Image (cartoon, rainbow, N blue to C red; front, side, top):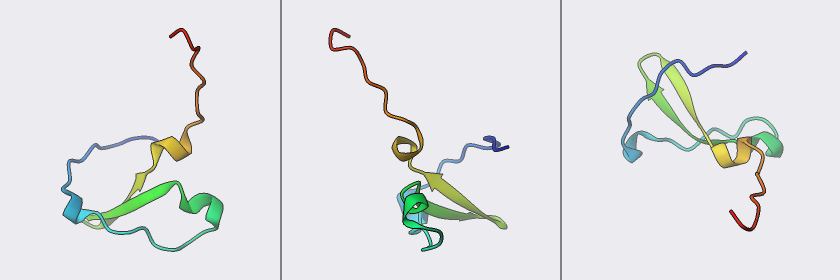
Length: 59
């Protein structure tokens, strides 16, 4: 099970390109990585992770 444990504020210069691991289907989920203390944190592409919701046209 995954969960959000922390929210960090970072500058764009701290974001590194994601490593080329996994298949093409999973590559689109990770936008970048950040080295923080002794951890490597992933930045998720929320639009790629969550399904698109069709809104009614009159909304």
